[in-house]
Length: 90
Image (cartoon, rainbow, N blue to C red; front, side, top):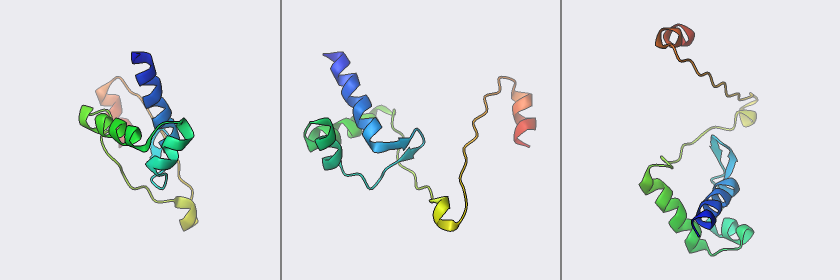
């Protein structure tokens, strides 16, 4: 039973997200529910649960760089040494 709960949550997240850091805010809960084969209220409750648990911290607005004639890129670095991190950021 728990596996189905986890799988359902993952499916909802996949349907709402475009990439791990970008969400399709235009996608309605009804559309997500229909695609997965559940009811809209289940989607709403599951997302609310994720917010309350701290797993989903919130939403953010990201400009579409292409509409401004630009490109967007994401670079993720993991540095274990704090001093190297400070130098790298600088």
